[in-house]
Length: 317
Image (tube, rainbow, N blue to C red):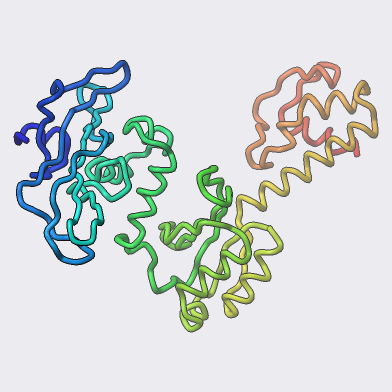
């Protein structure tokens, strides 16, 4: 095979040549096939008995996915060489250099997928770009786990735990971020936020002495996290995440406002005013405008600033 073909396909197996019985390329609507055959000049040793094997024909053509050519998926269609041992009568098909056994995707394509992880794209977009499935992209990502030093063996004095929706490609839709609370640097991504998964992760990666060094753990208001943190970090104080505290207060304030509206009735003066000016009730008192006065329809078109409106709303109940 010429060096140009090797460069295009990324498969550098010297035992692959063009199939002279077919055209060089077979064009289809959605993809292109490069027709090749596997050819060994020297006899192969039998892996069972060690005797020389002899050629025994070719296999049907198998398709190996290669990098795209002219914006279309390119497949190398290969008819593999079959061998048979005259001593033990076992048959054998030898693998292709650059392609894993029983796999139809070249290693070069998998390497391109791994390099693509540096870009902020989704797994579905990556799968579409390289003409593979989302599960293949997931497996390529998992294959890099052993080569990346993701987990630090030491923990900072203050850590934060924040759950997030990690999609549907893994067992649990909700995962957990382990963050350095001082530098806001992500230490690791824990696959599941469930109690058993979190407990197993910290016990497996960090010694008890290392976990005892943690002084503060910032987490949301989810009660089961409290018991877990007390067990794993016995010397740590739990600090409620500011975002979740504000969110909880906002929800309580909204539910209280709705209850008051129902008490007076939606068509009453109080109900209409509480519904119209709900955003002012949610504002920080220091952000209320007390300099500009506007006519307010729900208060007989009186000239009132935002602070006056809030005071009148609070006087209703």
